[in-house]
Length: 275
Image (cartoon, rainbow, N blue to C red; front, side, top):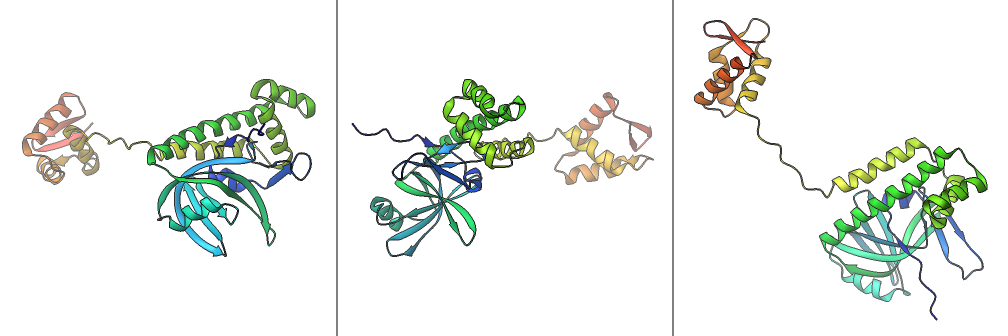
């Protein structure tokens, strides 16, 4: 019987790139896990984003950067990933790709970097990318809430582990415990990361066009700007409103509406004053 492969976690690039904790259970053949600041205990990742850079950096060694709304993943493929190398060598930049691969951490000149060793890379659509962002945002918020639960519980050690296990499951509970012991997690950090997640979702939402302001609001805005306390001549209001694209008829109707609503009055003939 084949061993069941690890779940491929969905994690935003900003969080993954902050990860610098790795551990292994058992002997040399046991899986290596990367622990992220929100407690994801991941051996494999599933990411979807835009390939913004692809280059051959050595003999049969390729590097790519895959961007999501929060940052970029580093992807390294070599001779043991021939299918990934083939796709990368022919890939046009920019292209949307979906990647499943192993999470890795390595150190170079005293700095720790997180990367992905791809098992599979495929071209993807914008719809797949957007669904990945939504799903990843949901999973990220679940982990943020698990962290908040841990911080607010007032518990430690085995009591906290049991409490988390009962509420978020044993796997995530173990990741949260390891993350808390390694990273300086605070409510402020969780607030900042929650905003990153929300902004990632906002980046794919359609922009809602604001309705054009009513003529009377345009005229009233001009009155507020031009009236320095003694009122403003009706002719000056007309000239300014004409410059805003209103017709004289629209301006006259707007002034009548404003006067009817009690928002402006005529202290003397030919002069308007805001209330």
